[in-house]
Image 1: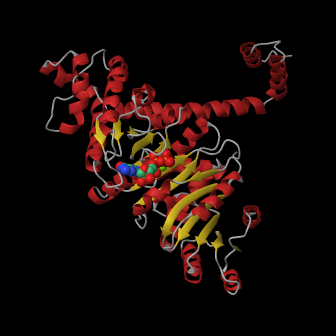
Image 2: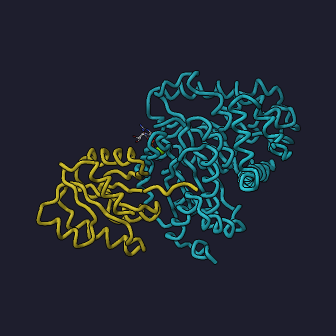
Length: 359
Length: 131
Ligand SMILES: Nc1nc2c(ncn2[C@@H]2O[C@H](COP(=O)(O)OP(=O)(O)OP(=O)(O)O)[C@@H](O)[C@H]2O)c(=O)[nH]1
Ligand SMILES: [Mg+2]
């Protein structure tokens, strides 16, 4: 079997396969097919946020924590943008992860976005499968928050951490509701800097605005108060629950207990990632989120949604290329010309092409 | 199928000062369409070899100003080889006395560039070397 060395922990084989997968080679595809039955075990953690908020420093510390306290194998996929003009990239996240060197239980791979957003998501998903099969129990994906890509990555991850920091023009406007919607855990990093309270306050009020309605729809039309077991996570839910309680409008213990597993309100964790402060709390929140995913059935729901979109993407590509390699190439070009001349709309063209009545 | 990109690890081994030169080269390589993994200051040979392994790079570029090239270069080449990556081309930028250059080439260093070298030259040599 091609992939035996990877299953046995050969790091060079793993690294080479990642390159094959990234270049979408036939060997890469074959290997992925072999590895697939070995996947589905890892906890995928997305880390996103504006440039310079301290994501890599945070990943560094979080990984140290998983290594020292939990003895878990950790893979890190550090994604940075390619230049749209030259296609090149400077991938600099490793600079903040030097503490992780010399540890065979950690594997860091940098990845450039290379063009299309959809392609990035597909390749990241493939990287994740390789690491998962190779026995990495935690897979952390760092992306710079800049639009569609982190939403795609969030869809891929089980737990998405959004990192904010004070001093980045962080008033309420700057903290976009959109990015908060994908957050399962919010981090205010650089808590040693002035303005932390402002950032935290802004986050909290944006959370109030952004979250409940979304969640209500998804959770049987009810907004719940999550803080029913304060002993389990005092700092985590205190703030979030306080902010949301008045909207929840329901604190009757019986129904709360009954439903609390369905509701997740993103906790806000303050960290100083250069010093490791707040990291145990962050790890705890991540663990609680994982627990919540299992309790609520969201773990398998996310798994299903992720694999479905993967299958759909592959299928679309395959159908398209099969269609075009058939007798349809010329007809396609002809239709395209008509569309360009405005003789035909894309819808009409597609309908006619599918009916095979172009001529 | 995506075209194969040239991947370059840029590292600054040794304990000396700044990494301005390394950053300039890193950006020039990016502008030439390469993917540059930048690792920063004070890298040990072990850290460099490990990063090269994880990143599956084609090229390692070392910025060495400390004069320690005769110790660092063979060590890094040896570690790359031990990892099964003897195919990686290693380039050195920095201050290398004329006497040492032939010895480094002998060891297997693919190119040596002083402070006056142009980035165009480096880019051309890298493209040639990984063909
Ligand atoms: N004061 C302070 N500085 C921090 C903290 N965390 C990170 N930094 C600094 O912030 C800068 C950026 O840190 P990175 O970890 O590279 O941030 P990043 O979000 O990964 O950056 P990009 O990947 O470039 O978007 C570095 O100079 C870090 O040393 C913190 O908690 N406090
Ligand atoms: Mg980073």
